[in-house]
Length: 142
Image (cartoon, rainbow, N blue to C red; front, side):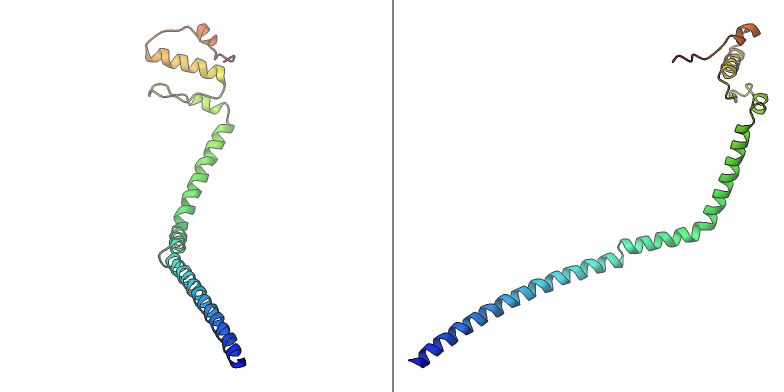
């Protein structure tokens, strides 16, 4: 009778150990599948993925850096000339050339309006007296 009870408990223990082993194996299989998926996605990312593209882009930028710096130097020179011309208030008024169809008008709004009207009148061959031109102005209320 005692042997039967011991065998019964041993059977229950073996069934519990088998269930625990089965559960442990399924968890190990799930963990292995998750790790394999992570390794696969990491290899895709590092292979021909974004890191490689970023590396190639940085390499091409590094190779093109001298040309970019030369272009920035040219741009700085042009901007220096623009700012220098902007500081000269009287000199641009002398450079007005309306005969080519386009003209440079100085920043003074009243003088610019006079120059615009004079240029348009010259294009349409209309004669406007100097006193009338002096009264030309832009509408500041709008």
